[in-house]
Length: 311
Image (cartoon, rainbow, N blue to C red; front, side, top):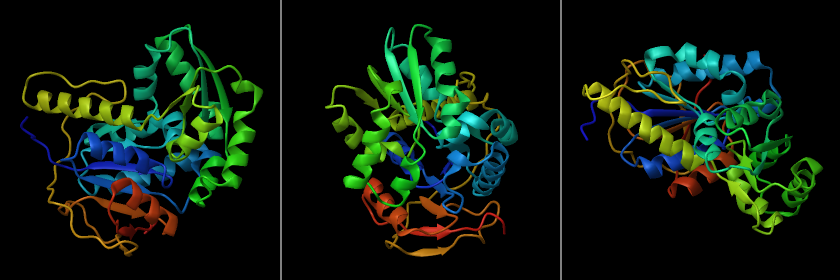
């Protein structure tokens, strides 16, 4: 396929969780360049007001657009559940806008007929009712039971995974009566795939624990293919997780450079229109755990670039 647009894919989250989506995107679309932003200075988003979440999301979107990203992927369920329509309108025709809830609801709904499905996520995600609404819109006979699990994100961000502390917290949440009798559990936060095997073990591997990252990556691939076909004059570009794709931004990509693990530099001086030099990972506040998780997901040492959103 002729790639008429080579601008990178911009992905953002409040912290390390979106790396699960970024890694899946890289697996499905290995030729694409990724610009990732982890807003570690403001995590977790799950207990923030909608106004604050939208404000952060707009600032990050502007930052990614400044790096010529032709796609903005909000790899955060809280953003996708609470402020998506406003953020999508803000991005407009400047880029393809993708969230992490629509692809999951659309791809799962047709396979869950008559099922009882659990959803765990942040308070904002659960309180929004986004998952039950979107799943039942496609498949009305699915019973959806939701539970807010607000301690899981800070637990993961602090590195408490696969240990006694995390096992106790997970056990406390998943023992809640609201999740009794479920057939499937949707991990409604992009942080949660990091502890997916702990969750599966709690259920003795008898409950299907859904990691949505690959579904989102597959949806993104389909949207990009439709967009390129549209630009070739072959077809329109529409999708449940995207606006209709008009003109999108273009940029230049080169092979990724040689990064050193733990090397953090100031990324705030990158100007609009500067060429992209490979996958780049930005944070608003550096954390060692972010470096370790990124290196595991991408199987190489990752250089983090610190950027102050308010400069």
